[in-house]
Image (cartoon, rainbow, N blue to C red; front, side, top):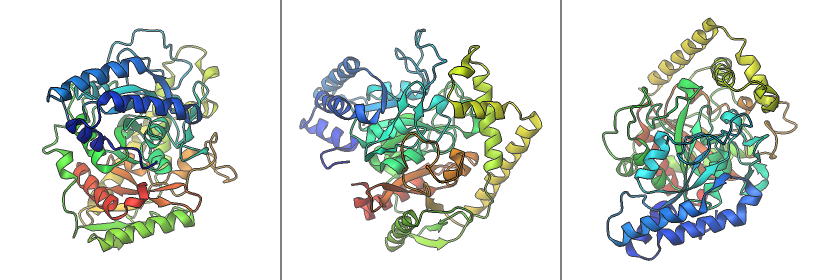
Length: 460
């Protein structure tokens, strides 16, 4: 990111004084898309005319002193996994026909419209958001704007790349195993996976209890503001939580000095790149110097990847079985393997994995009776070469093998945020993950805000 990029909070402050208009901000975002998206491939759809119409309406509201929300007129995007009225939602798949009625807004799209955000377009995703990088046979490879030879991460890599490159101040992604936090870490932005059900989903995700929606931004304040927009219940999601008892934009200012944080550099079983480990450790020391009590300890669970694989592949197979005949030949080859694996599980296998997920949640619940938050690296490695599902030469075969810090907390449904912690000697961003007890989204944001204050250079 460069110094000329404004955050959403700075934009609306400029709208209020008349120093900048939503039309100018939207034009700037569209110019950034024109200049950078040919290289990054963050967008699968851009609606410039529609965005400018929305911006004109917002400008009138600001001129009349009647904005409809604290993010009115902010240029934003939405991942191509969310139904969005008037735009196709093909989810990165050649098997979904774009030429059909698209007359329903998902809860996420509906809340963004109601709050006056300017929707620029839809961002890229791997097919049905199945992996930790962003590429697909339909939409090609999405690259990291920090270094286009590297992956943006995934599956919300299009959203992360768009925000990091100034192609819109905000975006909303999905996270079923790390898909908001992984690309946030790789691209040097903030990405929050809130408590399951905090942001309503419709239609229900095939990944069920693993799946979350999450805001992505260039600051913690902006992330909190977008949470206030997205956290309104929707009757179409039976798992949706009750409305928050207080605003996230206020909670982010909470004084967290004196709270107890567990720092687990490896979760007890993860191999971490030495440079990533050093950057995260330095950021944790800064939090300690700022008044957070840090204790280095592991939560005490073994890698739950086997259970995650059952839950993940079962959900993928259930969705893909509904695709039209011949879809297997059009599907991402890696996803075909997941499809085939998912078909092998029995109901008993699925229930066993669900029981393991529940046990992990209970363990973490007990852990948080002693520690207010858990801090880890977000990803154990920096971004690697684009166009690969795993780092070339690593000997790994599946994307969860290099994302061991993220998917456990989809299984437990806890809030977890990735915040920039610094950069490698090659200039690649490194993220720090903050995990809190279920329903403590406000606390996670507040600790993230403290890190942002004591390490502001990390996001520069």
